[in-house]
Length: 106
Image (tube, rainbow, N blue to C red; front, side):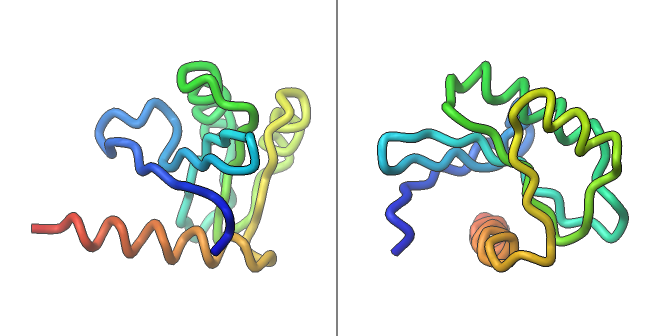
C-alpha cells in the first residue's frame, strides 16, 4: 500500500483533477494525461485551478508521455510537480486510473 487514500473526481466536471490523493497529512490534486504527444500548458493550468478549488496542498500532472518546455516553465512558476513516463509512478497511477475508468463502464 502507498499510504494514500484516493478519490476519483467526476469525469465530466473534474475541474482539472482526475484524482485527489490524501495521505501523511497531505492532499494532492492529480491531473492524468495518457497521451502520445507532449503535454502542454493546459494540463498545468487545469491542475492549478483544481488545487485552489479542492484546497489541496500540492498539484501534480502525471503522463505516460513528456511535457512541453512551456508546461515545465508554467509548472515551476506554480509549484506543480510534473511526472512523466520515464518514471515508475506514472505507470502505477495510469494503471489505477484505467482500472477505475473501466470498472465504471456500463
